[in-house]
Image 1 (cartoon, helix red, strand yellow):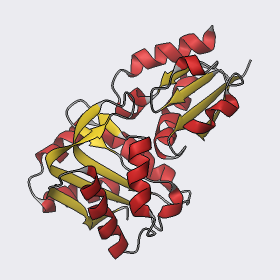
Image 2 (spheres, chains in turn red, blue):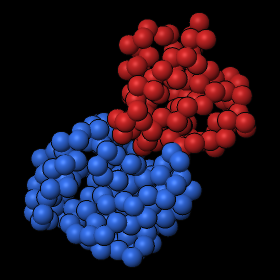
Image 3 (cartoon, helix red, strand yellow):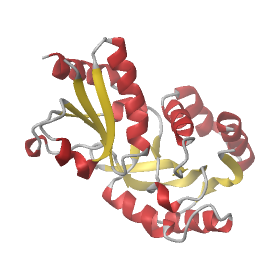
Length: 94
Length: 149
């Protein structure tokens, strides 16, 4: 089944673009069928419960959302990328 | 040309973010690269959505606004004389930042390319070290121009 992922940052432009490229690369690598889009953080309510995963540039309160959230910053700075990849894999494959 | 010599600043000193953003807005207005609303927009943006990144050896802020305030596709590079407090993009904790990358992006499809390069830069310890090692405006400008242009 196709997994739906939304990458979000403040303006839905700069950081989310950088994060999105890395997320896509990873999803292809592990062979997950996906659709991915970009949004602004305040628009996430709109996708909540519909999407399988939110990757955001900043920490959000998971209690406010049904969709699981991971912070995508490791993809921006190249630190702790592996831990993040594991998290993403676990969420999408469960 | 994303990087222009006169938009690279070496050893610039600011007391707070406000001063830094005013300086940046002044310089960009001189070149007619931003609309006059840019000045406020970039300050508000940083307040609401901080952009501080903690890299292995250097803390960087990738400050930017929504695209409607920019008239060109440029980068502003500032190596600061003394660190300035920003907030971490992920945790929102205070972060002493020494390098500012101003992303001046407009609505063309070119910004993908420049963002990809910025992203590679942030992840390259070698280039970050080279930036740290520069000791004149000339050196920093040349390094950034070679990398981005």
